[in-house]
Length: 492
Image (cartoon, rainbow, N blue to C red):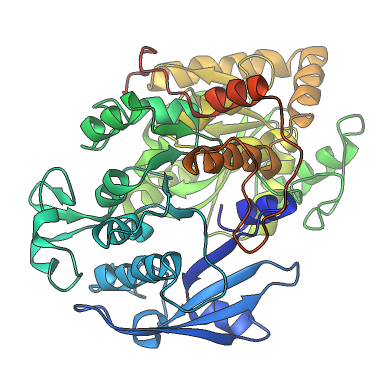
């Protein structure tokens, strides 16, 4: 989202800038970093510098340069041992505080944003810092997965510069701890998430991860939106450089050739049956327990499964054992590389996504573009982006029985070439462009600014033609409405 949405907004004429930590990989790839600001320390949060980088396509990125916090080997959140960095609270408080300081004009830059849009718990304290400082810049928090909340000990209040009065239920307190995500949700002017269905789901106890009371209240106030993510234009089987053969909906010889190559590369037996693909994090959220229940049935009915993923030890072990027990019919490649991911997508006839919950999901969109019909649990963004019986197959109950029933529908479709061709064409014709998401976010930014006009940074305040007031009203309602009367799907 931090790569795709800003570029789509920029194409709409909005002066958008990205703020992110100065990770070593980012700095190494930057052709030039210009120091544009120095920000002071506060409480236990160290001082930092702000570096400005211009990407080749003209996007401006601000880097929070604090070597002791970000210049490390590992992932953004974990060390090489896979454990969270013990100072993640300070690392992402520094990011949030930098955003707040830039927003209030304290960094001395000529550019000041009209709206601050933060993502998930790492940016969660930005709306809070602005509120505590009495700065009324409109803020939007997008929660990509409410299960990840950035929870830390209450002992860290002073170090994080959180005022004592904020440690309460109407503030940052969450079961006796500090929650960065809750802080962002509570203090932001608006909360969005990455699909309309997930926006409804997080207001329920089953999917709200303990925050359903807060999210429900926000929704009832009209401050919760669900806006689906997009995928970039590189997801096109007709021009994907990662594919050894290109193909289109009306010429699938390349798809069949890729399927043969993938089967050979993963040591699957030659087959005329359907190939079911999986590209996923190997974690419990993704429903691998019910997939393991059903996999033997898929094989017995003439199908094969090609899996690529990396995740927790228990899930990896479970799926490795499954592949060993069905050698030649089920293959698992532990790890991740994009060319192989794209080839499995291109090779597959059907794509398995039995997630317990899925805020948005991207692979179901990518799969449809590559003619692999998703077989998915009707939750979150999966329910919003797959048309059951038209571009894929959905099942409502989270269970092995329901997944198996959906797979049997896929087998029947595979046995009917005319239906399979019609569904593939419909799926490959779907467009999941960031431009669609950007238009919805633009309307939301306008709403936060209290005007129906197209927003512009204070730096470039030029007028563009407006839509009619009626149409503007209609579209804004559609983009931001969360219907709490719709019953949430049951968890298994």
